[in-house]
Image (cartoon, rainbow, N blue to C red):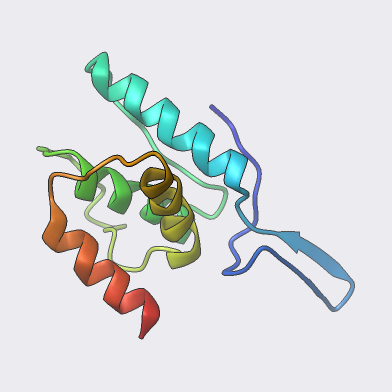
Amino acid sequence: MNLEFDDITEPEIFRKGIHAYGITDSQAEAIVKFLERAIDLNLDIYVHCRAGYSRSQAIVRYVKSRWAGPWETNPLNPDDKPNYYVLGKLREYENKQDIHSPIEGSLESDNNRNQG
């Protein structure tokens, strides 16, 4: 799966002549459905973004909070600084579908951090 969206924390911005687009609802849906299929089939998942930082960390954080591991992550790029806009969009789709994550404590702490 290959999706294009910029590492921003809002739907879109225009600064200094550059137009950037954040993750869309349909992209969040595609990511969640892709992850659900991959995990149901017990496939390995490799997540990466162009910069290799906060967008990928958001997806990794989502996976780790929704499905029990063990999950192996790159120790040089832990999921400690995810793009909370991306993470929120994934969870927004999850909530619309009435999907319940088994690891509720991590969801609450992320949601509180995102609002603070």
